[in-house]
Amino acid sequence: MTQAETQWASQEALAGLAGVLGTLECLHVNHPSDTRRAQIKAGVVAAAERAGLTVPPTWIGSLPSGARRFNLGAPGGIVTKTLTVPQITEGDHHVRPLYTAPVVDSDLDAVATGITHLQHRVLTDYAVRATPSAPGPSQSGSTRTPRQAGRTGEPPPSP
Image 1 (cartoon, rainbow, N blue to C red):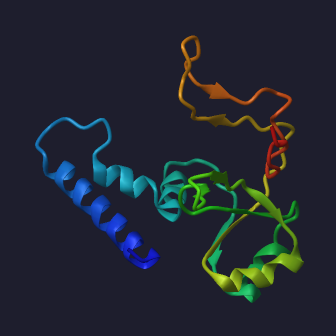
Image 2 (tube, one colour):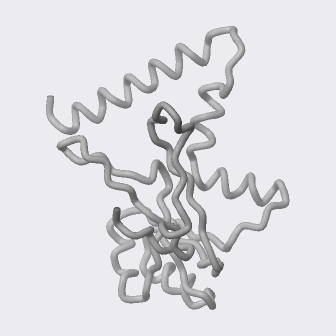
């Protein structure tokens, strides 16, 4: 199959599986439609605000002029974040994580290449990230050590 056909087939498989699971009259830990809705970042941001949580100002778009206006109102700068799964699987099945990353004004022309999610940077002293992994015999999961934790918006050091 071509790359386009493979992508289409993957979307078809996901729609079929989620559709079948969603129609089952059984107890779900997370109903497939709820899981799908939770994966739409703009909806999650809006739901968090409705729930009274503090959410940094957020911009989603593809016009460099809009991104520049958004950047002007950010005293601590801005970061770019993914709207979907924060990783890319390369052709050899190598998974490359996509970290929240600081953005400078000279980067903003690149938003014209596709939809971009920007937020005002939240300055913190520390960031802690929990990362999923296959647990070993005496390990229930994986978390980054303080040495690996970076300031918000900075990826942790490479292993």
